[in-house]
Length: 147
Image (tube, rainbow, N blue to C red; front, top):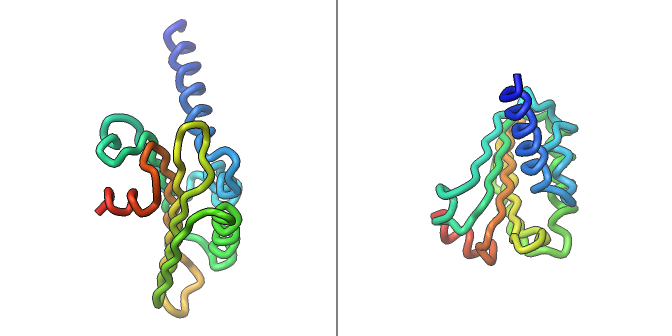
């Protein structure tokens, strides 16, 4: 019984610490499940040594299907987070990608990537949102490391 309580407390603390990563960003609404329900998203979280070669300490991604309206709302949130920051935007037929270095949090540089794909005449969009933090100093350097 005591071990179960300890494990439950440890799980709660780890979850609350990880949810703090996107604090202060508008797109945090998505990570909290306020736009797309958590059960409709595929989530990946990575911490530790596997990220060190990329000079990252935390990686979190969400993949899901969104309506056109939900995708537009998310784009606005990412746009709000990128105001005054260095960002790159790529738009092609059926695809939209935005990468941004957002404001620092403590000693961590933070990055946000948003990608949306769709087929003509479809209301649904395949969306991936990635949040990363670490010591990598710029978006350009991060892109080079991820090649």
